[in-house]
Amino acid sequence: MRSHEATARRISALSLAASAVLAVIKINVGLSASSTAVVSDGVESASDCVTSGLVLLGLWIAAKPSDSDHPYGHGRFEILSGLTIGVLLAVVGTGICIESLVRRNVTHVVSAYAIWPLILSIIVKAGFAAAKFRAGERTGSSSMSADARHDLLDLTSGVVALVGVSFALTHPSYAAADHWAGFCVGLIVIFVGLRVARETVLFLVDTMPDEKQMGEIRHAALSVAGAKGVEKCFARKTGLRYHVDLHLEVDPQLTVRESHNIATEVRIAVKTEVPWVEDVLVHVEPFEVLGTTPHISEISQKG
Image (tube, rainbow, N blue to C red):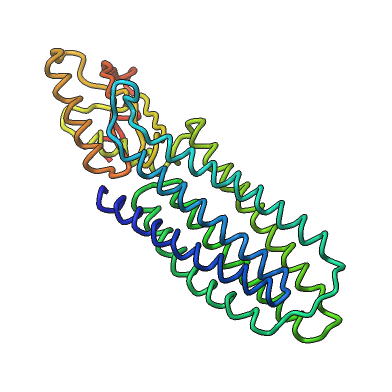
């Protein structure tokens, strides 16, 4: 996992440099070619520089070990950086939309060379989006996944801008297509920003993983000899991975030490078999069979 996190940081650093170069190229070419769509796409790329920087900052802080003030680690800083990215995208998108609407009736002639930086951007961003999605899945990084969507957004906005510029080049009467393409780029940015913000807020309010993921934890716990059942199981994301609270049922006739040893083995098993779990707090409970009906957790154990 640590090697994946290092890879994620390297990808973010490369993306930051590439976004800076693309932003400079698109804004300069857009201004000289009189293309609102290309300038808008350049501004969107400039925001990539800020978001990639936030991802790097979030990953760096999240990698710090836990201390007395942060017993669960510093992972929430990484989630906060993802939320900041979402809000920033929404603000940038709104600005692009407003500027495009203000200039929609401005007559202009777009130069043909305006399409080349857009094509370059589409190719580069496709590569970075694929790399970041893979890194986000491997590390569980919210901000890395958010940045991957931002690159996918940049690719989409590049395609929209390319279509608008192409229409504007076909005939002078279609010149307004360039402005409307810029407006569409802004809408795309707003949509992705709000979606990213929503997902990171869900993590901040301790939304549980899905049933399949929770099943992985229960299965790992019940694979330990002496683990009779799992009464309750909760998980919350504190950064790149989850912290788990697990109520383990054991034979009530066992000694405290024997119960403790089983709980320790369960903790190790869950952390070993479920890579997205950072730590497990195990509460030991007495296992009781109600009447003659097998306990649901006992059935799970046999399965």
